[in-house]
Length: 211
Image 1 (spheres, rainbow, N blue to C red):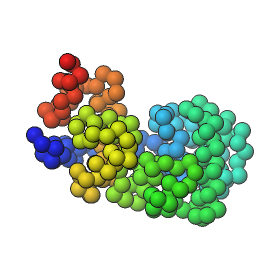
Image 2: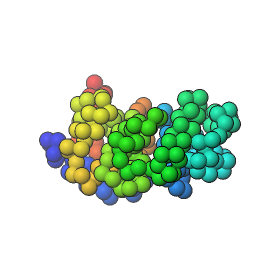
Image 3: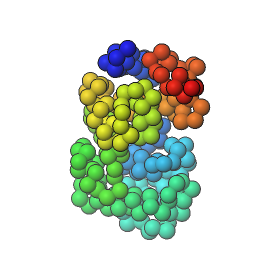
Image 4: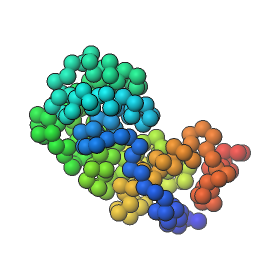
């Protein structure tokens, strides 16, 4: 089966699954982007444990932008890289409150020029908030894409480009939630559940891995 046929099978399979855009808890754009930044190299479950206190204490970008570093750090210190992330979310909040009047731009290039926001975050935020046709590449997307032999590169930007060329644009903002949930609960990094995988007939990972 060539790659175009595999893409058709993949789309048919995931289109039948419930679409969960993110497992991060949020009620507004401010909460979404802050939660996504905090989730880098950290589980959504862990982030969801600290954000209720954070968002109760700081209700918007303006409030977080003038928060004291130590106070924010004490709220989020249980997540990964709390020192760096404390500075990031304060800095991001300053820019979005002062330059963009609390509104998150619907433009990836604009967002990635804000210190603390990477391409994955920019793609994911715009895909969720504005239904923009962007592919956010994280470790799950990279792993699933590689195992399904959709991409050849390990570089997130190149993976994004390759996936964009393979899938029709209307599916671009669905690829991240599809592959993240699949990678998180079935195609795991360690001990993937290949035996019970509905895509095993188009995936050679198990055969290669067992050799």
